[in-house]
Amino acid sequence: MSKKDFDVKDLNLAEQGRWRIEWALKEMPVMRSLMDRFHNERPLDGVKMSGCLHITTETANLARALQMAGADIVLTASNPLSTQDDTAAALVSVYEIPTFAIKGEDNDTYYQHLNAALDHRPNLTMDDGADLVSMLHTERTNQIPDIIGSTEETTTGIIRLRAMAAEGALKFPVIAVNDADTKHLFDNRYGTGQSTLDGIIRATNILIAGKVFVVAGYGWCSRGIAMRARGLGANVIVTEVEPMKALEAVMDGFRVMPMMEAAPQADFICSATGNKHVIDKHHFEVMKDGCCVSNSGHFNVEINIPALEEMAVDRRHPRTFVDEYQLADGRNIRLLGEGRLVNLAAAEGHPAAVMDMSFANQAMSAVYVFQNGKNLENKVYRVPKEIDEEIARFKLESMGIMIDVLTPEQEKYLNSWQEGT
Image (tube, rainbow, N blue to C red; front, side, top):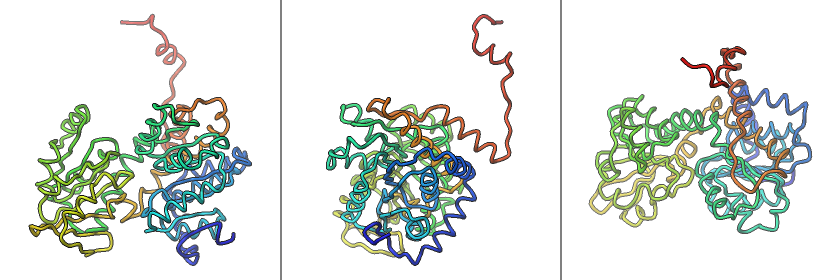
C-alpha cells in the first residue's frame, strides 16, 4: 500500500496493535463464527465498502470479517478522539485494510479522511454517526447512484437519518443497527455503562463512591451509566425531558429532577442523550467548584463548550484528558475528553464481549443490504428479526447456555384463540 492509501500515526505500532486485536477476538465468539462462515461463503464478493467507525480493536475484527466475506473495505474514524493508533497501524500493515485515522486529528484532517473513504467509490457504507451518509447527500451526490445502501451503528446517527427520511431526503435504504435488541439492550446499556465509568475514572482518578453523579437522559446508554455509577457507590441523579423515562428512573430508585436543580449538587455530570446543549451556560453558572463534566453521546454538542470557553478567565490542562476552566468567581469546571465520547477519548471504548453482538449485527446487516437493497425503499429499516435472534442464539451457545424449545402443543396454543379458561 502506498502512503496515499492510508493515513495513520505510526506504522511501527502495528505489532502492538495486532496483539490487541487478537486479544479482543478471543472475547468475540459470534464474530469468530461469522468469520468462518464468511470465509467459506464469500457473501460480499466484489463489493466496495467504506466504513466510518471508531477505530478500535473490535472494529478491526469487524473489518477483518468483512474482508473475509469478500468486501474491498476502507476505514475512517467516526470521531477525532476515538482512534487507537496501534489498531490503525495494524489494520494497514498487518491486515492490508486502507485506514484513515489518527487520534487527536483536527477537524480539517477529520473531513479529509471522510473524503478519502468516499474516494473509494463504495457500493455500501457503514456509519457510526451518519457522517458518510450526510456527506454523500450534501457534497458528493454524484456518487449516490453507486450506493446500494448503508448501515448505522448509533442512536445519534439514526436520529439524523430518520429526519432525512421524514423529509424525503434519504436517497438509499439504511439498516438501523442500533435498533436491534442484541445491540441497544446490551451494547448501549452494559457497554456504555462500563466504558463510560472507565473513561471518567482514567481521566480523573477521583473516587466515585460518595459523590453526586448526575446522568442526563434515561435512554439505554444513560441507564447503563446510572447503573454502573450507583454500583460504584455514587449518589445518582437522573435528568430527563420524557415523562415515561423519568418515571422509569424514579421506579428504578434514582432521584429525578431538572438539570438546573441537579447541577449545583453534582460532583460529576455525564450526558448521553443525542441532543444539543444538554449541559448549557446557565448550568455552568450554578455548578460547584471542581465539577467534572463529560459526554458519552456521539457528538460533543451535548455540552455547550463555546459558552464555557467564553465564561472562562483561564484554562489549564492538569491531566491528559482534563481541561480545567477557571471562571471569574474562582470556580473551576473540569471538562473531560474535550467533551467528546469520554469512553473512547479517555479509555478504550466498550469491552469486546458486548461489541461482539453489535458488530455481528453490522456484518450480517451489510450482507442483507447487499442481497436485498434493490428491493428496499429509501428509508430506515430495523435489523430483520431473524438476524437479531440468530445472533442471540450464537451468543448463548458461546456462553454454554441452553434454553427451552416450544413443544408443538405449546406453539399451537400460542397461535390459537379457541382455548381459554
